[in-house]
Figure 1 (tube, one colour):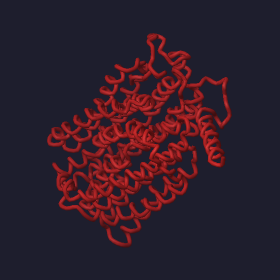
Figure 2 (cartoon, helix red, strand yellow; figure 1 turned 30 degrees about the vertical axis):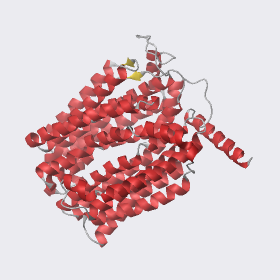
Figure 3 (spheres, helix red, strand yellow; figure 1 turned 90 degrees about the horizontal axis):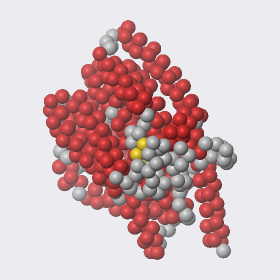
Figure 4 (spheres, one colour; figure 1 turned 180 degrees about the horizontal axis):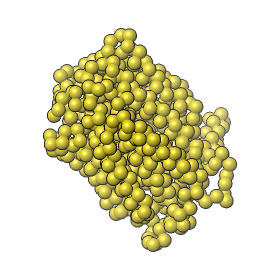
Length: 531
């Protein structure tokens, strides 16, 4: 009887969470347009989680200007490459279970089964971390490292710890426990950054000491996360649950790895072709230009519990289309403003020996890469919700191969600009491949032509900012224009958050979520948006 009461309590709490995901302030709003209602949630309650992630990104970004002044370029290059290895191993160790856990949470008996999947995540990450450490001398040599030890070995364990913490955060997010989620997130990011800098200042200015600080605070974050979201016992009779979770999650490992190839492999290839100092310079430029993409990737993670909870025919498709168009609108002032302000940020981020003004074009090309990345995310969200993880894996694999090939060719010809250009083209290929796969499964509705033209214009303006001089007078002008872009962004954000901008999308798709111009049947109640 006691176990039954606990089960009913968990089910009631799960139901309340789902209702809260689909309402404003936890109160039903049946009279609202469901698309506008969901949009208020995406850009309202969910934005609080977004703020937490943004603070993590800002904390990580703020490390760069300090670290580049505390350690030499070679040591900073080691930090960059070891971090890239950590990010790859983090994905492998996670087994895609964080997303699988959130999808399971939205189903029947979700809270209990999600907690059991957290146990699976702990076991999987532990085994794979030990395996990566045991084979370290082999794969490190293949990647061009002189030996396996110190910073690189610490990065391996940092990755395993982070994978388990990420699964815990996924459960906390699905439970809508903002305080616990924020505390763990900030401890593993802002707290870890502060600890690492203190160690570099007072122990030794080396890459190994810096990564040691990151790993130590990751241990603390993981301990707190497991206390807040304890795993449940995984039983023998849970084999079907495990099979289904791995069947859904494992394809996400190569899919996310391919995404990391697009975002991190260029550092390894720049190091191999140009050396440690160029990779340090490229890391600085990429850190600045990649900010929109990082925030978009955070949004993709933050929004998924709400997307999973939308199960009425057509509703999920309409919300995905509306959120895509809203992100396009927000991306326009972001691209223009960040490109205008790039010389200012680069000079803060790196000392003069990095030649920050020479990195401007590299930075802007990375900024503009957010356009195809946003387009690909819109299709990916729908495919994830419908369970087509293998389709995502196949499509991103094609983009990853494209990225490697382009880096091999373009870095030798265009150096750092070539690496940035390879990233842009690869994201565009990823988007096209996702569309080709999705169109064979589900009907597609395009984004408004006016929105696409506006995006193209903003991208062109961003590239043109690279020819504006960077002397004192023009830097002041850039600063004024950046402030204007911030005001522009805030106005768009207020309109999007209110849900008013979804009216045109609702009229265009109709109440069922289908596009009026094409009354094609839809599969599993989802219509994908194309751009």
